[in-house]
View 1 (cartoon, rainbow, N blue to C red):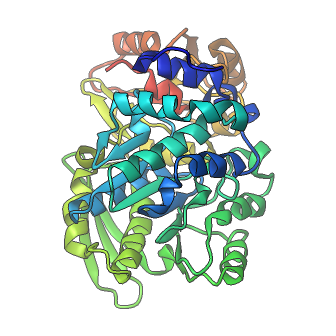
View 2 (view 1 turned 120 degrees about the vertical axis):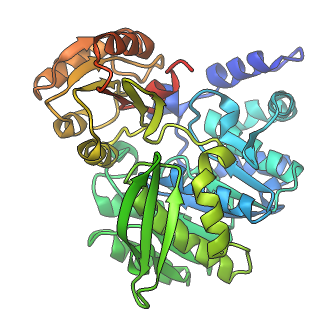
Length: 435
């Protein structure tokens, strides 16, 4: 399809969403099994990714939070910082930010018009175009450094054309097995595909099955590898005014530092350990990511970068919390968080997409909650009635609703002011919660 006339922003988005295969909408059919298209697109626009420094971040869970924390630290250090993440919650432009500010609508329109001659010949996916768009924007904005979050996997992900200052792998868990492999070793191998020749790599969490995979790839690439959890650990934590207060100890010197974090989920303690080591590795390379800068940045990650949907309190009395957890490990962390929360009754609004391990997620959820089954408005969404039936077999009971806001209305009407309402199960469901 050629663009005959100048499109406005809304028309440009419609074109991107409906003309190009989009994983978040249709699933595996949108995935291209190599990075050729991204290479071709970036060559066509002058290889923008070679014009700025990057940090490349992969992992099953936590890569979004980790990316935003690192971006906040680099911004606080005074660097003009790009941030590429996916998917978005509300606005497509959340994917592409500089110093926490989304790219302009006019840029999106202009970029799609400029690359249109290559769309027919290259036939890129939606994700490949957005990656090229982000790199073009960061080059145009002359960022000092960009934090680039992997979309899916690592080895074959469109973002894997960057040669970064540092690679980061947060953790390995069960997600997208139909694309990445049916063992943790296979999934780890795909994620380890971001390890580049002689570029240091920080691994957040590892287990017996995944460590040899990382060690082998790092050895092959002659890349220095550091395991964050071997360097520091959280020795104590507390909640203070909706913030997470972490006491972090060094494993060798036992020196301790206290950090305040405005992302209150206790699971952020693991991401914080990864971020501290990544910041240290950048510091060793000459970046101004010292302890004082980190301490200044972490209490204002949301303000600096616009991160949402991580154990995010959006309403009180009753408390309404959003969390984008959507796979086995993510839901397990949310359930741990629920055990720390105080409330009278628990209400859970959940929607999922068809290609997740739904049975595994449902088996982890608490039975002593009232459920409101819903669905997001994308083709991949599992319809709410089917989710309700499946959940019933796990002893999870409740009604189904056509959309998340109707479900939330019902939950709020039946909740006591001291109850807790949690919305989770799909990034897309959380994204449809009305402001």
